[in-house]
Image (cartoon, rainbow, N blue to C red; front, side, top):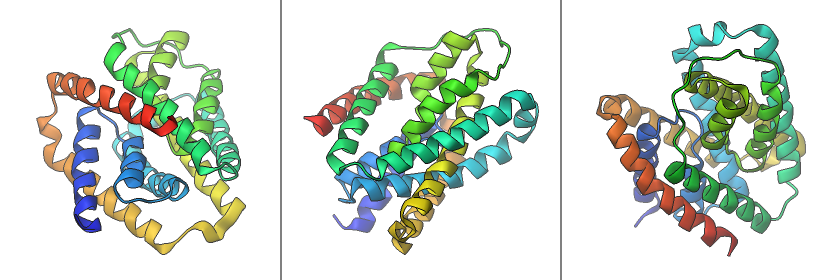
Length: 249
C-alpha cells in the first residue's frame, strides 16, 4: 500500500476513534500509526502530532470560548503558565533521549490509557470549585506532553475528578487548557533545542492530518452516541495495551 493510501487510512481510523472517544486535541494514536505504518522516526512523529495538536487547539478555543472566559483568572493563568513550562522542560529532556527510551515511555502510556478505557469509567459528579492547585497536576502531564506529545487526558480527567472534586466537564476543560499550553511549550522547546529539526514535510503532514480529522468530526459528529463510545472504548483499550507491550518488549 502506498504512503498516501496509508495516510488516508490513518485519517479514517484516528478520526473515527477520537470522534467516538470525544478527543478533541490529544491524538496519541497518530504517533503510533506514524511509527508503525509510515515508518516515521518517533522524534519526528512527536513533532508532527504536536503540530496537529496545536492546530486542533485553535478549533477547541473557538468552540469553547465562553466556557474558557468563565474560568477564574487565578486558576487559568497558573495552569497555562506552568503547563507551558512543563511542555518546554519535557521537550528539552525528550529531545536528548534515545528513540528506544521514548518508545518505552510511549508504550507504558499506551498500556495505562488502554487499562483506563477498559476498566475505569468516570462517574458523573456535581461541579466543584476550581483552585490554583490544579496547576500542579497540569505540570506533571505537561511534561508528558513535551516528552511524547501526549496530553494524558484519559488519565488526567479521572485524577482531577478524584482529587479536586471536579465534574467531568470541568476536568475536561482544565485538562484541555493544560494540554493546549503544554503543546505550545513542546514546540517552543524544540525551536530552542534545534530549530533545524523542523522539516517542511512535517508541516505538510500535520496540515493534512488536521484537515482530515476535522472533516471526519464535522461529517460524522451526529453519529456519536454513548453506546458507540463504550464500544469504541472496549475495542481501542485492549489494542492499546497490546501495542504498548510491543513497544517496550
